[in-house]
Length: 91
Image 1 (cartoon, rainbow, N blue to C red):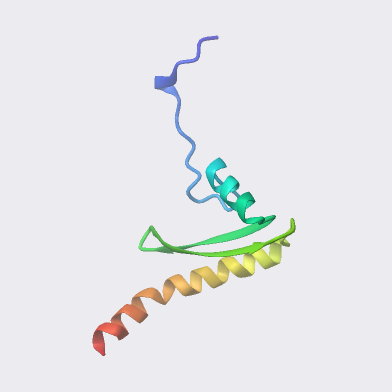
Image 2: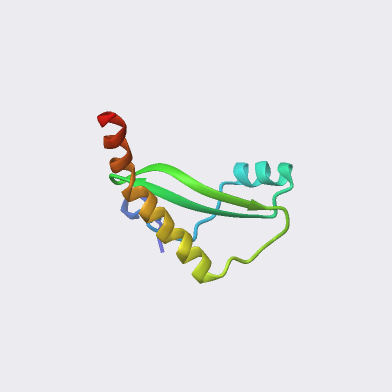
């Protein structure tokens, strides 16, 4: 069996809800004594606009419905970006 890199497709994880952090970021968190992190992306017009991030000093499991609630909050906040920008321009 021959492995040909030219024929392989890359895996797009941009819409994945569970992803790993980079080793550099993990080291950064360890240096701060952080044991758990929850990050939710704020997507505006198809691009990363910001993030909601929560840390805890001890390891934690965040239940599915809590993660889902954070995801819904991110969707709502993302939908309000244009509204806020237009209101700022109007003032």
